[in-house]
Image (cartoon, rainbow, N blue to C red; front, side):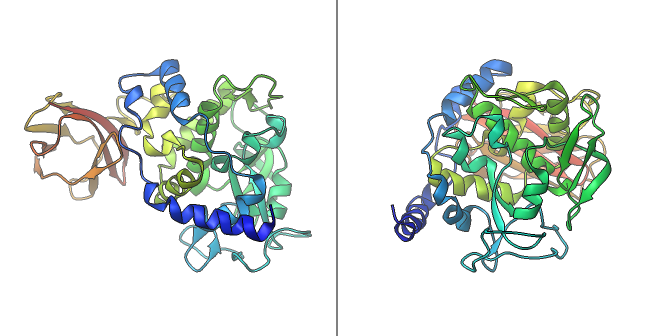
Length: 357
């Protein structure tokens, strides 16, 4: 297929599927009530057999999956959230690599889960969920090293990403550390890979960070902490919807962050009853007309946001009143079914589940 026709096809496909970017009704119904390995297996069955995009089409896909305002490429290896990035790349400006000699020369396609870890085979080698547009020089510096936390850096990018010896317990080799603002993004990407290719990783060479498609214990603990400390952002939600328009599958750990701890538990040293992301106390449950939610300690009663989300991804704004440190939530108008509760504040994020009778 000629490049110009392929580009046109991808752009048109993105527009055609734009209206289907949200979570389809009942998408996660099959995993209600599951946890541990059955939940991971159930999610795998939901997101398996995605529509495979040609690797050559990814640059065109990025115009909808990884775009900032102004036709700017959203490069997590150079971006500085809330600040001024050291350089910018623009779509349709000839910024794709090509040759590069230093940081800021061009951007290319970064397999955040390196190709050598799965043998560079399809469909993994073109799965948009783990392939991001990044600066070519930084991508090269990262090479196929694991992600990790760096003690003493041997090299630092212009946005603060680092290469150096791992300081996280359990591994002491060379790692690449992205900035804190994007660590959760990469953690949820890895949870996706472990789940999408669950049971399909026979022959994967693996890495110091992975055994087949599964994270080794040190890496899993680190990624769970990254997932906790850097909650899901609007960027990830928008990207999840945009990739769904192409591949017709989703990253469950963006739609429902609690799935990570429901499968793998909380990181070692994290008290799941007192630390975010923790479970909300919701009662009565099931509920018919109203339910109560105890605010976790540390939340200022004037600075929190409560989201109520159905299994198909629809968000509801229900009447809420505050009585001391307890929220009273009206659910009388809701249809019977299963709902997720997400309470976010500057003190952290908490999750709960509600059954409406």
